[in-house]
Image (cartoon, rainbow, N blue to C red; front, side):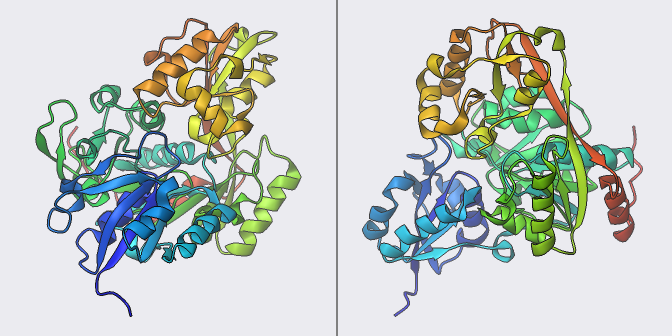
Length: 472
């Protein structure tokens, strides 16, 4: 007989899990969320989802977060009926492996969809997602914003969550308008990699946090420095104005906001992922437009494989070809030199990429890669044990102060002529690097037609959008 109130565990990684809870379970008396479990991101288990976020009416003590390794015993301990899988970029075999654990323990396995989890905005929403981590969502988002700002629109970006602070109340709503805001909000390297490229251009502000309805419409949050509760504006009513909300997705998740235009990004360096990873295939199937990125560095066979897979599952989506164009600030430091390449962390770990922008630039300019593995310390050594296929690259792991310190020590330990930084941030601003630094950037460049500009022109015309006149 079906219970009147069903016990639930939400299986996550400090992102989609919290969002699914907030939008569906928080005030739902038919369900009792007894626990979150955490995976994929170091150091996020053994915390509490605080009562202020959980809703004091049903969860006056908050909700405890446990390691995912305890899932089976938690199902038994809490007499759990339903387990919600709520994190991203996992192969189907992994997802169904978790399903087997859940079912064997007696509970139902649940994948929640857009209708129960998307928040509707009063502003037009353009959403950017991908089939895998590291496809090029951020550079695609930046290119879209560049075009829209050029048309005269105020664009507010909202980024997929990365709430790593032990006190999640300090991250309910976050707004970033300048580089100083990154420090004020105590951002980790992982957060800065996503926020900094937006604010340094001064084209737009970017929001993130935990509660995505409050992030959109405004709400209370704790000041990260004073600890006092303050009222924050949301993306829709941003102090600088908002004409269009740009959802900048994380990993390969589908949007938290109901989009008016969905743009997916696929990566021919990892062909087949678009039909074999969750929830990346969801993004590919729901996209109005799909950017096939990195065609400048992928083989023709792989490009054609991705193109055919996308045509099969989403024949109506427009396909845009694009290249990821690299910039190198000091190429003279590369030729014939031994270099340590530091790449974006998540792209190498759960994104499973074998190379990144820094690697491509270093090899193109005749450098020799130094293997950092003999020189790693602390959390960086653990990262290579968890992800042994990373190889001769160093992921810029920085989910907290300890990892950032270990990254600094590992770089200092590694004998090399230069450090090639392939992450989107100015890494030496946050950690000391004694060796010469070569910064590698990357921007999206469409090839042929259609282009993003043509897609956006159609979108603006379809929705009869016009830039508002604003006082300078």
